[in-house]
Length: 172
Image (cartoon, one colour):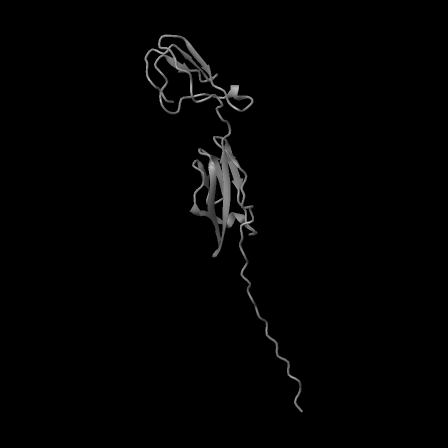
């Protein structure tokens, strides 16, 4: 009778790791003209080996994605609801996720946009106001259009004052 024969062999069965983006799809809101920073993350053990890229949609103007760190940062320059897709890539693995980021006005000028008709040559003053407490610490500037000749805006107080010297319709 033949003896029992036992054969064994060792096998290696590699299982490719999974890569997914673990950051919540609803990113924290951004305030317009205020610093914004959020760090994206994955389930990878070594997040520093991940390469990040924007594959669809767009970030709010003024924000950018750092491809090495996964940080979305900057100053949002426009209001809106932004939907975009970010891809994480590491060692041949890819993961994509769609995100939503809402950018809102940090401060709103509450002074009515229609100003009573001014008389050329007569003193005029208009105090601009905002919806935020502490707005007196704001800096005011004319970003579009022109004031009537003879009027100026005080950058520290938001007071438009002076004596308009020329008739016309001025939009600013």
